[in-house]
Amino acid sequence: MIEYDSLLRAPRAIEELRELRTHRSLLRELVSRNLKVRYKRSAFGFLWTMVSPTLMLVALSLVFSRTFTSITPAYPAYVFPGLLLWNFFAQSTTIAGEEMAAADVWKRVRFPKTALAISTLLTGLVNLMLALLPLILVLLLVGRPLGAALFTLPLTIVLASLFVLGVSLILATGALYFPDVMPAWGMLLPPLMFSAPVVYPASILPRWLAPWLRANPMTLYIEAFRAPLYSNAIPAATTFAAMFATALLMLTAGWLLFTHFADDIAYRA
Image 1 (cartoon, rainbow, N blue to C red):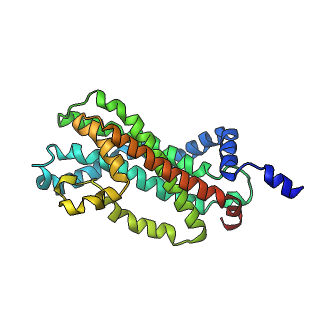
Image 2: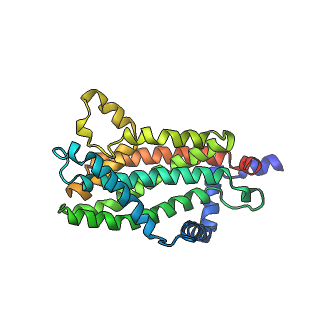
Image 3: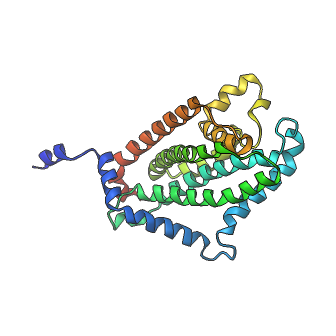
């Protein structure tokens, strides 16, 4: 009977999707909890979401504005979009990996284990949306053109989010078995940031470094996110195709890997 039931059982990756659908309200509660916990004791509350990247923007502008002014006019408007999307990627993957690897609740309560990673991603999206407010203000202050290209932003953000979720699930799986994964990820993030055009224009790099730049998948998403904001330009269809393929590949790999070991998580968390 046990062997017969196991044959009828759907793949674990499919079961996880069904459980998520059943526990839709859990995602809302987890996102609400994340936001409340993060800003509960803060005097400025959600304003920190806007103040923190703005302060980083000021610091980077003071350091690099003169260096890149001939290549990137209105440098603050150039660096701000890349900085916001990179922070979304770095913070979401780090928090998801750390929280999922330390979730003792898995030992006591049965619920879809991917919910923590998804709720962390959704929380990061809320923060990203809030941080867009000072970004738009900066763009207006420096006189950058804003137009119909902005309507491509939601698609770019969705594709970037799927990519981030895939990375988060892979990190979480590794962290459950190897505690050094997340500290190593924290050390890897700074060099990864400088291997993508976050604070500098890709055009300054010598041609032989171009493949290195393209090897970082975040380059795709950062440039597509920046284009409508800085240049009022619509990314090419090939760019969206590449972003979709990359996101699908990473999400599929992360989802299959994580759900494959999901039943073992309660014993290791």
